[in-house]
Amino acid sequence: MSESVPVRCPACRREHVYTAPWYPCACGAPVAPCLDGAAEPTRVAHRAWDEDWVTVSCGACGRRDQWPRPELGCPCGAVLRVPVAGTGAAPPAAPEPRPAFHPVTIRTARDAVTAVALYLRWLGYRDIRRADQRPPSGVGLAARGLVAHVDPTVRPASRRDVECLWLTAMTEDSECVYFSLAGYAEDARGCADALGVPLFVLDLTGAPQAVNGVADALSLRREGL
Image (cartoon, rainbow, N blue to C red; front, side, top):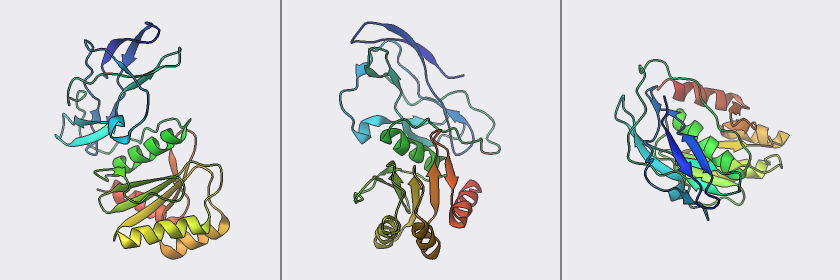
């Protein structure tokens, strides 16, 4: 079971009970951060990528990975960052078949980036971070041997978008993958098939759906790790 702690909003002094979410480790065990119920939460005033993630150890296999830092939205409008006590984990489960992917609901562009980062980690990619080269639009993510583009706009991705991602991956000698909320133009799909670029569509539940055969192959290959 995930841990629950009392949380008092520093803005309105309202009391909450917060339950830490858990995420599936690559070994199959559920992992959740240990919360510090004695420490005061902090109000999120601005976003920074490094501050949005926390390193947590899996109690089953010992793998250390980064997961979204616990946060709570207060009805007064404040977003609270819940203190983390350490790098503990939730009680381990048997590391058998990989559990189903648990998406995060997409309400903002940041949610879309978080959903993609979680999905890539679920597939087994490590060291997920912001890409060194910022794309013309959307958000670039990178992992070991991979460049990913997250397009949270309402405009279908174009052929040029796919080509730019492919060229970036070529310069970094990496694979690439494209995630879009609004889908893809017809010529973008044809270009992706010709270049071997996996295309995924994100629905508002945060669950990526493969658009082309290359994306299906990527999912099956990584799930077999």
